Image (cartoon, rainbow, N blue to C red; front, side, top):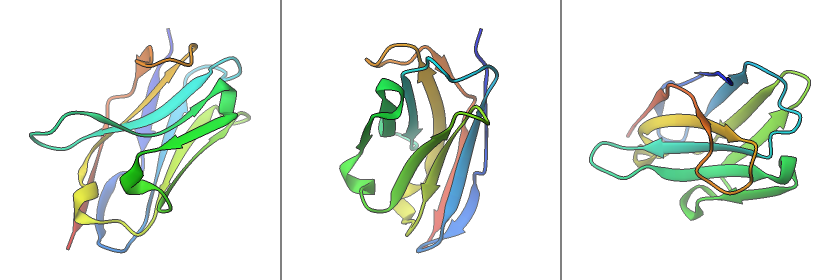
Length: 119
């Protein structure tokens, strides 16, 4: 069983930055899909950023391109989401998710961390 623990959420002002971290309970070697999803109140969950094929391919939601950066640290078994130039519409619960297969949905999910951006 793989467990994920997210941290780094909180309150930020518009234009500010936050970095989310997701610690994985076992080695991430062999994990092909690592991603961050978000869900705002009354909206469907959406995939914000992902790394597939062990980090070879990177994909971003159009609305976060140029502002968010996903990365992984194999030595620390951690995946990050650096969020810059935050906007109020980025407010949501952010979930880390990983899987051994490239195709979503991923197998394992974190508990979620709240990100709130004030205008």
